[in-house]
Length: 171
Image 1 (cartoon, rainbow, N blue to C red):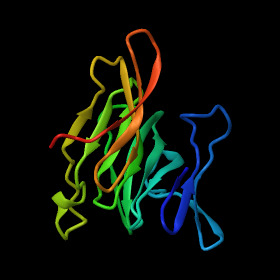
Image 2: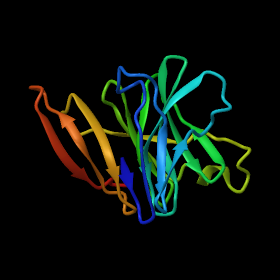
Image 3: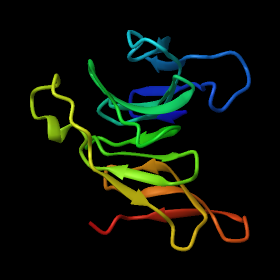
Image 4: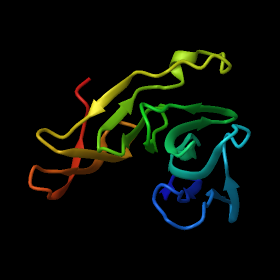
């Protein structure tokens, strides 16, 4: 679940649950609605909405052909950005920066994923992904992202211990 100034979003999907597929949802002005971006894509199911920015960008993941695929939504434009199989989108900020991770615990960050498209949303260009990895960690899971690009998440150390972190990218 995520909250911005006007919306609350959430939901789960098959990736995190053994139960029947469920849909993501959006709560705005006291009303719940189902969130299913891209339902017209054959073979998709089980939408999860994990992030919402203050200007209404959304991020999450869905099931597609047995794998989780991360997505980003801005108004009617929908972008799917699988780095490889089983990728989860966890957060988005008002700059259209996104974060997430693969099932193996490889965190990622992408700056301004809509910027590379210009004004033509019909031209979908793959964003440039930057690895988010806590030093010497076995796995890194970024979960939160501020408009100033501060990232919060967890990492697994060499002994299997789980710790939290807050980081600011150095770019």
